[in-house]
Length: 81
Image 1 (cartoon, rainbow, N blue to C red):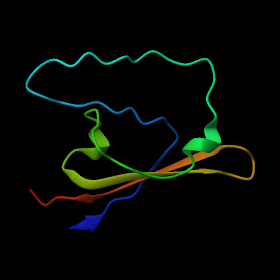
Image 2 (cartoon, rainbow, N blue to C red):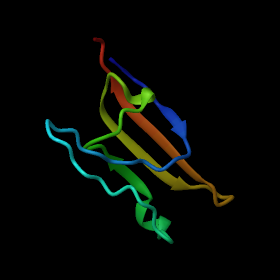
Image 3 (spheres, rainbow, N blue to C red):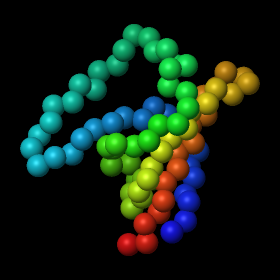
Image 4 (cartoon, rainbow, N blue to C red):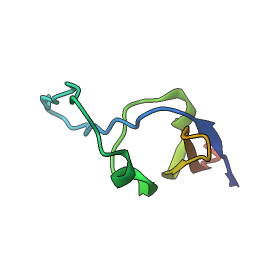
């Protein structure tokens, strides 16, 4: 197993997969208090993103850079399957 860091600037979308269809509201909001989302977030569900396939213990860390940009670092453990 190896740590597999990926740097990206994006919002993480959460979804649940089950045997039956789940209706998910993917609409956007007018404004976001971005400071509430800074820090580490641990995955509880996910969309099928290519960069997370075959990974476990996935987390994302959000931070505001000196120039105001938001840095998102995604990490996970690559499973050897």
